[in-house]
Length: 117
Image 1 (tube, helix red, strand yellow):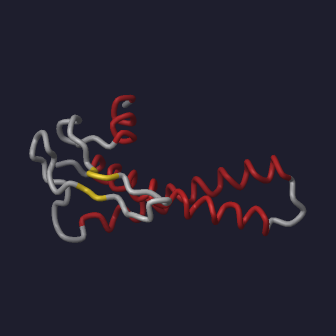
Image 2 (cartoon, rainbow, N blue to C red):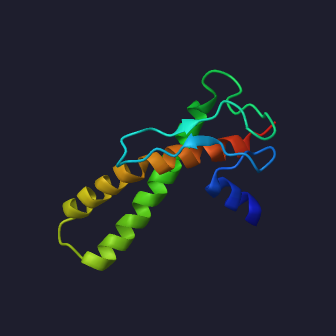
């Protein structure tokens, strides 16, 4: 279990756990979406099984976003103790936009690990 979580975070192939899933990580400051390899460079494992395979990863991304937003809300409401939650909402919105590239990348990898055939 420990190695699986590490491999998901690093972004290795779910089959051989050596090849990289993404060519480029992308990022908020680069304004680029992450680019995936079609197949693993080590074991030739095909990442996208069929067209639309990663639509389900949107649910994983949603789950990550909600968890991050709740955690951030609890942290920010404890630290700043604003009378109005609107300021906290703005901080969370900015953080969620910044984390969207990470969430997209990690949710696709989690999806592949969940349904490795």
